[in-house]
Amino acid sequence: MAKLWGGRFTKETNKLVEEFTASISFDQKLALEDIEGSLAHVKMLGETEIIPIEDVKLIIEGLLKLRSKIESGEMEYSVEHEDIHMNIEKQLIELIGPAGGKLHTGRSRNDQVATDMHLYLNRKTKELIGLVKAVQEAILEQAKDNVETIIPGYTHLQRAQPVSFAHHLLAYFWMFQRDKERLKDSMKRVNWSPLGAGALAGTTFPIDRERSAELLGFDTVYPNSMDAVSDRDFIVEFLSVGSLVMTHISRLSEELVIWSSQEFQFIELDDSFCTGSSIMPQKKNPDVPELLRAKTGRVYGSLIGLLTVLKGLPLAYNKDMQEDKEGMFDTVDTLEGCLNLLAPMIETMTVRKDAMQKAVNQDFSNATDIADYLVTKGVAFRDAHEIIGKIVLYALQEKKFLLDLEMEEFKQFSPLFENDIYTVLSPDRVVGARESYGGTSPSQVRKQIQLAEEEVVL
Image 1 (cartoon, one colour):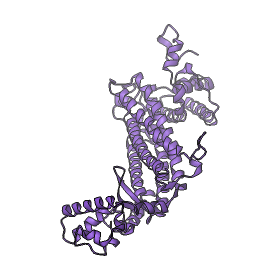
Image 2 (spheres, rainbow, N blue to C red; image 1 turned 180 degrees about the horizontal axis):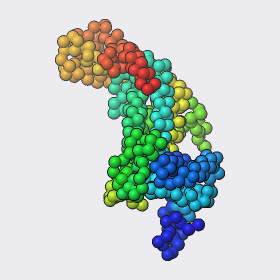
Image 3 (tube, helix red, strand yellow; image 1 turned 45 degrees about the vertical axis):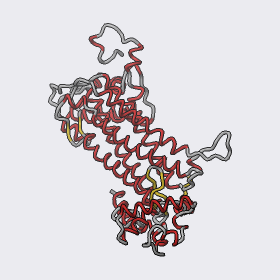
Image 4 (cartoon, one colour; image 1 turned 135 degrees about the horizontal axis):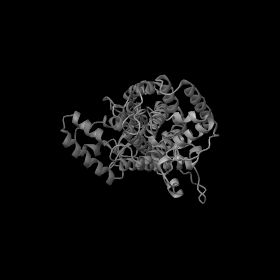
């Protein structure tokens, strides 16, 4: 069969051009969305009496048969037919005859492909929200088991103050909560219908765009036909949110890699999420979090790639926009793969509480509490800060930690020190004293867990 757009051409398309411009190798992922959009479009054409009801029934019957072939994996695609739209329309015409050629009445591939992508991201965004929620639930369960487990808290990757391990984990819960909210909010822009905008200027046929949108479950329609076919903001927004999701996955993965190292030994990842070395039999490598960390780059690349495509495009549709899909598909696949692995990896990791406890007993992360101790006795904080700095320097020179110092040693720096300083310096006491809202004390962490449980069910 000749190309559906070939009427004004006198030569066949160069095979290299055909292969270069074809998108069927990747946009076949939109096959079910293309059928869904076509079903809504033809129903609207029938209701508005733009095409005869007999043809509508025949087209619907044909589209349903093609949908079954797609779902069963029997559908065959051809580069000669360029894209998913032409492939489906060609096969529809072959299946039901000339009536299939009436399906494209009142629409263009420009509004058709935009509709398909809106439908695709609608479905995938909902699925990704569920996967983010699963990660949150895994974090929450580990947090519940580790409210009173104490770990060194870090700034600049230097030990700063001891914190509840649950508190540390819950920081990621809230990162993913914001990601989930951003995904939900993006649906407001995803759920706009471009169908019926035509190539760029609308159509002369008396179509009902609101009806098509209603049939497809969209919230509203684009009020401007040129914007409808050229808008890719909703994909940019998705890639941007996806980049933030990957940022948070990568940050958590970095911690898992560090914590599972021989130098830290704070956690042990389950064997099913690690690999070995081909030459060093003792190795247990955290390959999964390392790859999660690395895959962040490809999502960033997709975002920058699409922004670069769009930045110089005049209205309305341009062939450049064919480059909008592969990055979107790859980002969806990457997010699905990463989130599906992250949740069970967190669920099955072993928390080595003994190693964490040993760490917080052998550092100076309780130093701030000595300063606070002196402040309660009337010393200005800046003066207290200087005193504690000198105590830490002295302890380092004596190869001691703060809890190892004798009372006489403390009193060399201030007569205000009493025996209760040893209670103040206890890691449990240091953590428990952080009672401010959002702090790391066990009571505050339990309140945070309760709040997180309320959020995760929404």
